[in-house]
Structure formats: structure tokens, C-alpha cells
Amino acid sequence: MPCLFCSIIAGEIPCHKVYEDELVIAFLDIGPVSTGHTLVLPKAHAENLEAGSVTDAECLMLAVYAIAPSILKAVGADGYNLGMNHGECAGQDVMHTHLHIMPRTNGVPRSFTKTHPSQDELATTAEKIRAEILKVG
Ligand code: 5GP
Ligand code: ZN
Image 1 (cartoon, rainbow, N blue to C red):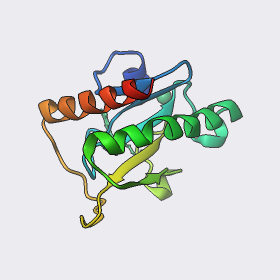
Image 2 (image 1 turned 60 degrees about the vertical axis):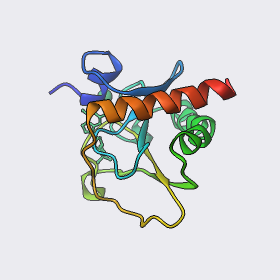
Image 3 (image 1 turned 45 degrees about the vertical axis):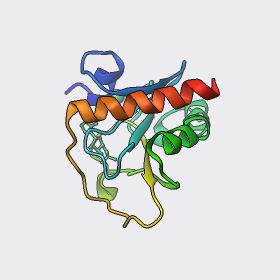
Image 4 (image 1 turned 135 degrees about the horizontal axis):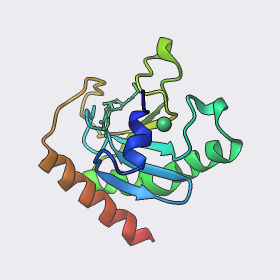
């Protein structure tokens, strides 16, 4: 069965992309636990972190470093949870390495329950995040 995230990377399945460089792509989670919940992943397919290259592992965290502050600004959040579900036992549903950036806001309870925003809402959030990322170049 083709990999869902490889299909997204190839442009065969649409996504709300917020960032892309040579090795990494980031797009909004379709079932966010908070507004701005973003998935960051190496473009090269690997089932888990250690199945991929060290370079991809490094670039994943570099991308978090680069874009997380812009995500927080865009959605008015104060911090974030960074998560990786590694293996089925840990809740990994998509077997293509990815990190979850889950923005958090002071005074708002931390929920890990998925929500179901409309495509329009996701598009608006992605646009705000892209605009903030552009500001920092
Ligand atoms: P995992 O459980 O593997 O760590 O996370 C997979 C994530 O991918 C889930 O949070 C889920 O909501 C998200 N997801 C599943 N299908 C799609 C999709 O088609 N598009 C996007 N953008 N996210 C998806
Ligand atoms: Zn893949």
C-alpha cells in the first residue's frame, strides 16, 4: 500500500503546507489537537527515525527550530508539545517518520483529542503560519 505521507509529499494528495526545504516538509495535521498542530517530516520515506539518515533526523529538528516560533505567533500560542509516536505500540498510525508540533496556550487545558476543522479553517491557519514564516525569512 502506498505511504500516505509520501503521496502528500508527491502532491498526489492535497495538504495545507506551511514549510518546505530540500529535505523536510511541514503541513497541518488534518485532525489537530490544537489550532496550528503541524506535522514535520523528512521527504525521504523511512518508517521510523532510525530507519532514516542521521541527516534527516538533524534536519527534522532544525525545521522545528526554524518554524515553531512562527507557528506560535500565527495562532497566538505560548508554547508547544513536541511529539513522536514511534511504532504501533506508541500510537504511530502513519509509518513515515514525523514530529507533531502541538501549540499550547496559557490557561487552555492540554487536550490530545483530535478536532475536525473545516478545510477553510485549516487553509486560514496555514496561511497565517506561512505569513509568519515569511517574516523571518
Ligand atoms: P501518528 O499517529 O502516526 O503519529 O500521526 C499521524 C497523524 O496524521 C495523525 O495525527 C492524523 O490526524 C494525521 N493524518 C492522518 N491522515 C492525514 C491526512 O490525510 N492529511 C493530514 N494532513 N494529516 C493526516
Ligand atoms: Zn512515506
